[in-house]
Image (cartoon, each protein chain N blue to C red):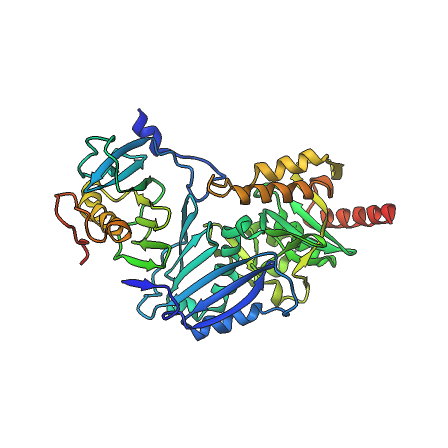
Length: 154
Length: 325
């Protein structure tokens, strides 16, 4: 099965798990902006409105690369945000590591195996939306329910 | 908790040299500033490149967490969690490091000198002009000696035995190689020497120590060469001789000359894979490996214990030096 294969990654020269393939892709439209998501686990695809017409130009495009990290068994911890002019990094223990490059418009994340789909959708996806919002849209991004989202930890 | 890295939150600044590269450090902590002083170098020492490191010590971070070390990377970003409860993020494209340390980590000099800085050089690696190679590194008769081999081949035990024979000791595990005006230069960082528990057969003095669980989960003795008079320590050397250590069950100790292609293939194939976002780093590493492949090199195939192997290697190098003098 494609999905199962994409979760298995054994490469002794890839200690940082940089090269885990992310064959599952979807494009979302959030207001006038486009978010392209790639992942190795379909449960990490966000429950956001899909891009209905890719021919309509977007003001800005941002990429999310979300990796289900089957070698990480840690639970979520309260988030620590490290922000600088170019990069924002969020550490929630080994269960969730996120990095957003503001200039390159890339949001890269590792989600541990113990983070279930519901926790991902209800807690992490709003967090991703908020990071995206702060990077690009200055509060214009709508969350999974079409409303502005606040982080679940607030 | 949100921590912002800027000039207001990082009032203290300094710079220092490590592995031939210049670290531009900004922090909010006097303790970190003092720890960095360990690395201060003469002002006329030329660095091959530089990187920025910004370190916030957060008094609210609980340093009692027993969380193991955890590193992940994607494209040009690398994230790390280090005990005692510290977070570090590497931006390989911009050569910047951001770290948040617990007070427990900040007050521990060994955390800074033996963990965070060596790991930082290893992660930034080729992006700052320093190629990490999985080798022991020593110095004898004016020449650098690299001992390469797969994990478990016995590099650390052989390096320790060579140091006991009078070789100057630079590193038992990783050598950081950079290009300089005077050729390749291999640096070591002050990691403790890790020796597996069975090494006490060859080094009885280890019985006075207690094996510990190391960062990669192995249980090993950690021998601090700075605390032993048996070690003549050196920070760097020009590599001239390379030995590829292979353990065999019989046949004594033999040195078999290698071709340049063997050297190149070994280091290329045993190197960490780099992402496409870092083409210059890939090119630099290939260039350094190409230059290394011009060194004299041999497969060191041995069934002997570390001391006998060290004696054979020492005698062999003496002959090589006489022949080429």
